Image (cartoon, rainbow, N blue to C red):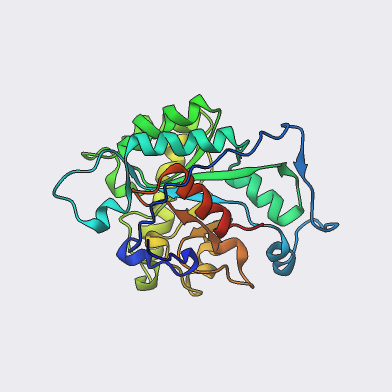
Length: 281
């Protein structure tokens, strides 16, 4: 078994790891829904970066494709393709352990004002807009009363294996959050002047037209960010941004919120243990 450090995962090479553990895991008992995480400290209306950093992190999981593996696919591809049975067992374990899903507005309010969250909060996120997220992930979440965040790459809307506009609208109407993942997945480190309009402004506008709701959250392509991107995101009304591969930035924690990608051969217990190690708060 490879010793995986999720804080230094190389997302650009799709996680050269796949830790499969066989030890059975007993779900933690379900906590009453009325139990809440309380604010760490007494709050001013909007917390500063240091206060945000002091709050316990909320686990945020990241999925891509949810389908069966194909025999001719590379190890790197399989690292981001989770078989449906594996995915279902992961959600079942989370539900059995008492986790409740939160959405970006909930997380933002918790981080900036100390607003309470459920005792065991978790955020489920999905990148790119693949059709199997609509056909498999959404129905499975519904069984458990879970809601998720779908970061859509708008160049792919209606194409081949991706969701169409009506399906995105349906997810939004059902209470999931639709957020931006750029137009065509271009790395923000490569952006030049016109790219901000193409990759940030237009996709958000298009998704707002589809859902009828503001699009205020963003996931960096490949999970990779840089400091130069943050002022541009703020300028274009992005409230918070989600990355994958590094620690949060202590001066811009709202724009470097961490997620943990779930490789395709992690069993539910393996995923659970990795999540507990990664988000120790």
